[in-house]
Amino acid sequence: MKQLAQLRIPWGVDEGMQLSGPKNFVFENSKVGTVIIRAMPYIFAFAGLAFLLMTIAAGFGFLTSTGDPKKTDLAKQRLSNAVIGFLLIFAAFWAVQIAGLVFGIQEITDIFK
Image (tube, rainbow, N blue to C red; front, side):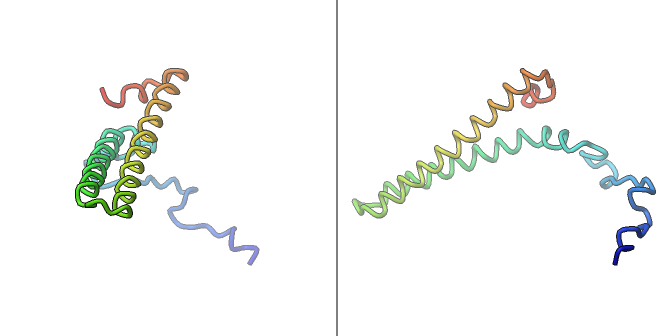
């Protein structure tokens, strides 16, 4: 059992195998940070759409509650969850932008340009 860690795996890290995606793949041979930076506009667009849909669902819950306290409380909870989630994403975005300015990382400050 002690020698299990000593086995050579063909095409392992020692062999220098390059891992890459399909040909003409957008993120081919990219670093993880590059992939995240390129995906950020789509992530924020999805978060904005989710916030909009959750706000609409909460408003619909208010409209259809007909004075029922349980339904009204559920709609209030949905609305507060949507607002808290939006504020967390907004604060995270600005925290990363400020960190990018402080540390001089140009890729972070150019995400939406």
